Amino acid sequence: MRRAHSGFSIWRALAWLLASLAALVLLVQLWFLGHVLYWVHENPRSTSFMDARFEALRKKRPQAKIVHAWVPYSSISVHLKRAIIAAEDARFIDHEGFDWDGIERAMDKNQRKGKLVAGGSTITQQLAKNLFLSGERSWLRKGQEAIIAAMLEGVMKKRRIFEIYLNVVEWGDDVFGAEAAAARYFGVHASQLSPEQAARLAAMLPRPRFYQRNRDSQYLARYSSTILARMPQVKVP
Image: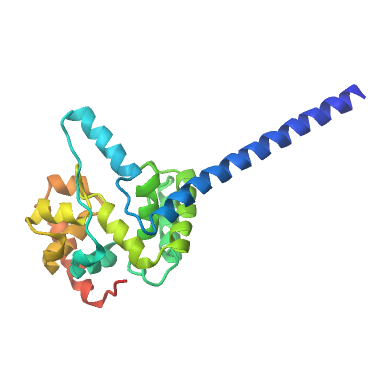
């Protein structure tokens, strides 16, 4: 009887532990969802990724500052919108947060490399990561990214998702958002970017800090030309 009672107690403790973990996971997801709902109409003042970059910069340069200025969607050049969709997520208008063909290609690449080196992330997934998560590559982080991306697509219109993305994406060590990037690299407002300038900024996005230091890269020039050629066919929200 004692052995049976002991076994029952272990299972009851295990069930309580699992229920507690499930409740904790649910609370975390509700916390994410609460922020997403708030940002349907309010603009994020900062992001998790921005805060992490600022902390890293302050360790190197105590006086470092993040350059960031929010501008409304209508004040961002349509050329930049087209360039970024052409470069980062050609099916942004049509998918519901996930590009399954892109994910399949990324999984094939990861299998060949034997580790997580590519994620096939859409603009929505990139925004989910920037808003809430770290830059580490792990399956756990990708899973949470997917959940947040589904939340974003569920409560926000494409135009709003893209507006937030354009205002918080990294364009260098201390440069975030289209307005700051346009001023830093071309001395203009985001609304004034030409097609060529927009293509150049879009080409920087996969490695913005590297291209901030290597603006004369031949690859950057070639990739900019490729994006420029794709832009006329791109539809924007």
